[in-house]
Length: 207
Image 1 (cartoon, rainbow, N blue to C red):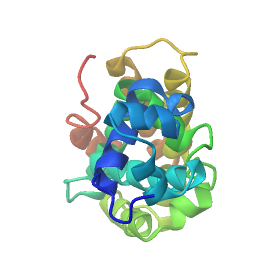
Image 2: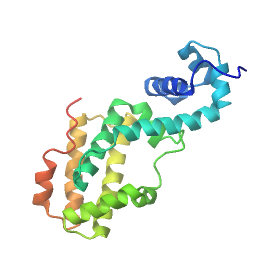
Image 3: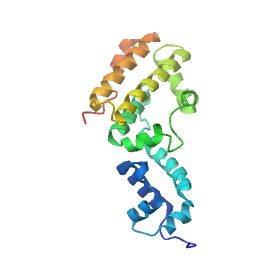
Image 4: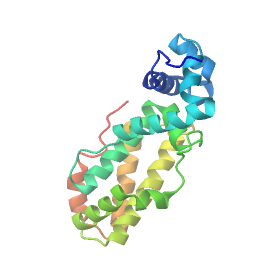
């Protein structure tokens, strides 16, 4: 194998991600990726060793790509959380192969499953505190609202990404909004404040 491959690792990972999004993970292998790049298999093998090595690094690369899409810009905890929810829905609709790879079939190693890990992550801990303060509810109640919202949203968009459920993006966002208001109501949040914030949330538009 060459000691200094001409094709850089990032270029290979970008091509692999493009194939994953377009064709699905099952269509991705070293020979198919080499054909996509119009090169031999040597640079891919040199960088990643085998398909397991490629999958591991592709998982990190794909997760970074998805996380960048879901990075919130809002300062409000509630708006930031719903901004992430809208981006999550967008990925399920617009890039279902990526969504399945990362959050459903386990191929990436990042398949959603540990809700406790999601809730206890540093970013979500700060989010829980913000939501608690914004709606004058306990952090326990805010945590429960966030957890319920994650479970509900993941369930709906998994059905969409798998082709089981046929709804528009706007319809799904409306369902998630209604569920979110219901979850907040269960936690004794100020729904008037919620509705005033919610007028501009989960606005992914009709696709």
